[in-house]
Length: 54
Image (tube, helix red, strand yellow):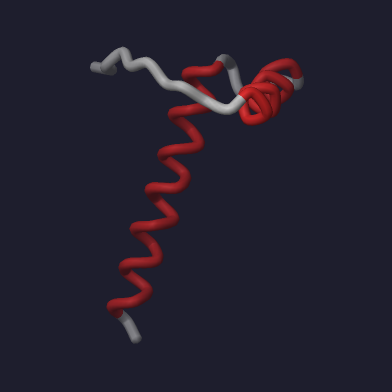
């Protein structure tokens, strides 16, 4: 289940997202936000696990 939220975003960032929607990189704004946040979360988790191996 997904929660509905409201996000304020800089106009330039929103223009970038919208341009990626037009080129079908993202299905819509919600898809873009979810994909970008989950990608960053995965990268952060990988960084934490890498730090534990040194």
